[in-house]
Image 1 (cartoon, rainbow, N blue to C red):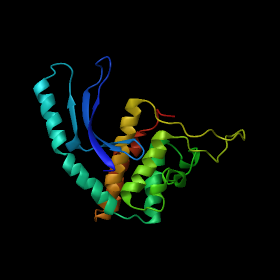
Image 2: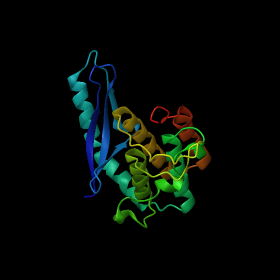
Image 3: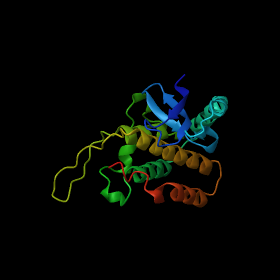
Amino acid sequence: MENRIDLVLYNSHDLTSILDLYAGILRKVCANGLIAWDKMYNFKHKHIGFNMGEFLESARSLAGSMGNISDRIEDMQRIELEPQEQSFLATSALMLRFPGKLEDAPVNPVDLLQPRWSMDRGKTDLWTTFNTVQENVIKGGLPSQKRTATGRKRKPTRPITALKADLELNKALWFLTESMAAVKRGADPVTVRKDFADRYLNKAVGSDLN
């Protein structure tokens, strides 16, 4: 089995944030952690008045949804993307990671589409494309061919190491991929893209990651 679905618990050491429970997908070939984000796959609990029974029920509900998540992964594996669709996915991911003008990003969208694993080369399905883009965005290390205003070559992209930033970016990337799947199934692309932009691009998800 290439993918393993786990329960992911996000908490703060000082109890200042709400306790979040998500479905996490581990791609075993690269130990690449993904977050399957959907209202159905996310439960929140406050520390004040915390109810263990309600928390356990959330965990059971999330565990029960794992079959549905597996079905969605298989659906993405069956969806083939055209080059322009892969480019749109990579461009949107780059804008999430480096908000602002696209030309100011240290790398180009095509750089996010370069597989790190031989088994992914030549594949154009949505699931593989998502994994490739997500790993390049989160793990960083991509060499930049661009230069600074003073003419110096820019440094490679940095990995996302902060847990909260990793979580937020993963959520946005999952929503982006689900949006692409919806378009391929016949949803109106203008409406879907506007919804994605309103939720994430206009909020500058990666503004505090640089």
